[in-house]
Image 1 (cartoon, rainbow, N blue to C red):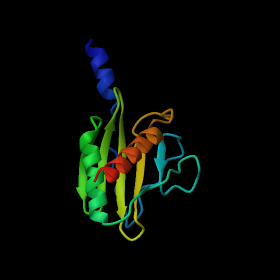
Image 2 (image 1 turned 60 degrees about the vertical axis):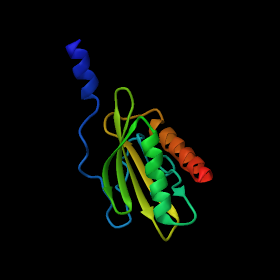
Image 3 (image 1 turned 180 degrees about the horizontal axis):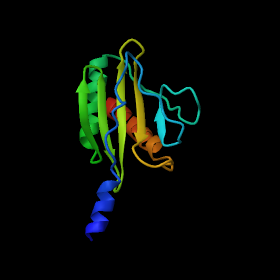
Length: 141
């Protein structure tokens, strides 16, 4: 049982130290298919940013509310116009980043697995789920 618990918690991996925004740019995805980014140039990693209209601060607050409603998401770092979150599944932890582009009316996003090569599409499907929740929250306001 102890070995099983060690194996389970060992799958979380360590927080990467290369995350964070440089100017208006998030870290690029690695070559592996376990990452998506709205700033990626290639189709394998590219995902649309979150779009909003109206007040950028309200949109970012709405995104934080979405995270508060999710049982798998913890905000790890919060700066003006930037959020870093941990996204958990049963065995693994992924890192998500969200960067508010005030003039573009979008929130750039990136989500990457800490461990492994393939995530079987989990990062992409989770970001699309967050997108749906973000849009629903806008309609409810």
